[in-house]
Every structure is written in C-alpha cells, then in structure tokens.
Image (cartoon, rainbow, N blue to C red; front, side):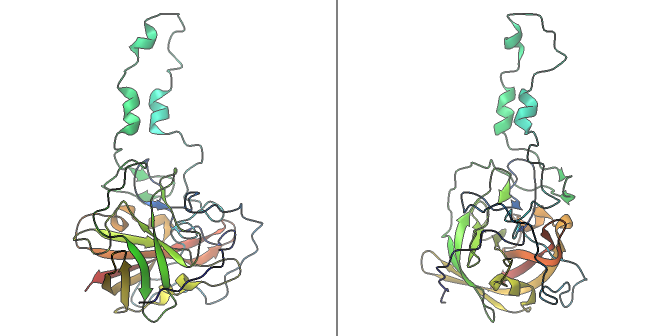
Length: 301
C-alpha cells in the first residue's frame, strides 16, 4: 500500500467544522481542531457555497439525511457549530469549588476548614455521562477518562489509511482530545487522525475511530469521496510495525450532527469495527458548517 505524500501546507481554515460531539469533561467523543495538532487562523468572512452535486445527501439503501461531520470534520477549523458547548461553560470543578454566596460573612476563623476537603477531588473523578443538551446528543454509557489521561498503547498505532477506488490514501496520526473534550483532527487534508484513547485497528473489541477534513474553501479534497464509497469496498490500514490490516465496508451513511450518537461511535465493547468520519450534507452559510457527518463503517477480514 502506497501512501501519498503531500508537502503543501493546508489552507488556514476549512469550510467544515468536523465531527461535533460536545460532551461532559472527559467524555471521549467530540471532534475539534486542537492547537496541539495544528493552529488554525480565525476564519475570514465566509463566501463559500458547496458546488451543486458535490455532497450527496442520500446514500443508496439509506434514508435521506444531510451531512456535516467531526469539526472541518468534528473540527473547529471554521466558525464554531451550533452544537458546540459555550466557550466559558463552568466546569464541574468550578461549580464545586465556588463559594456559597449565601454563606454568612462573619469572620469565623473556622469557616475555611468547614469546606469539604474532598470536594476539589471531584474534578479529577470520572464524570458520569449525561445528555449533551446543547447539541441534543444522547451520550449514553460511554466509557470515559480524564482528558489528560496517560496513553498506554496496547496495539501498534495505525500510520496509513487506503480506501480502494478512491483518492483516500493518507497518513494517519495519533490524536487525543482538546480542552473542550473534542477529538483532535490534523489540519492537513492528506492526514487522518486516529483516536488513541479508544481501540486501535485490529483490536478484539470496540470501534477504532478515524476522522479527517472534507474540503477547503477552494478545493475538494480526498475525503469528499467518502460518501460515495460502495458497500464491499476494501479498506487497508497500515500499522507502525509494518503489518497491514484489511477491512470491508459494511455501511456508509449521512448522519445529522444533532443526532450523532457518541456512545455508538466511540464504544469500546462489542464486535470490532473501523469508523471513518468526515463532514458532509448541506452547507449552512449562517452557521459556517456542514449539517451532517459522513460515517463509514468497515468490518475486519
């Protein structure tokens, strides 16, 4: 398998915001561009309109739905999508540590000791998943871990992705989550990100998740072809140890961002699957984002 090499730098921002899965702190779901993967300049006034017919809103055998994906996939490369969490939303730690405004102002020297010394630790505890109200996403029982959890690789990392019959032949980078609990996505249109805190390709159980940008303001990029991949298409994943894994596509569909189920996409149990995600569907000029995500599912051979 040959992976295309592209030295040209990516445009300063993408016309898509990648997969948006805003969740409580620590939940490994959303996808946004992270400064640790590559900084993106603030988007200029948006004038882009998707060329007619470029993004299909229907996949054969599936209900008609629009697309928009992980933030330029799930990404924050353009204006923040409507489902994003408020930038200054207080964390559970802030809520726990905030002083009670109704508490008496008497200079009781014992008052500081009255605070529960264990309370601050709540910020480090694994939060219980809840419904992502701002995005209308039912998170469900998603396994979670702190955003700064140490990465303990169990399987060789993927380094290349190739989808037969398409121009999708790209490098794969290990990515995590940013400070807004969103999956990081590489800025380059010729790279995909693999969510390193979840299962790796070749794992016995759970979903290995990859995501990439779909296009720029002026060019249609490789992952724009993801929506047209046929059932039965072969997907090859190259590993850092030199081995290759082969998958067969079982499903490709457009999923509205507002209904994208993080617990299903990022699950760590059940039969092993490969999930590849990008933006798609109708372009929403007012929101500076695509409406849906394109989600490809492939099963190991």
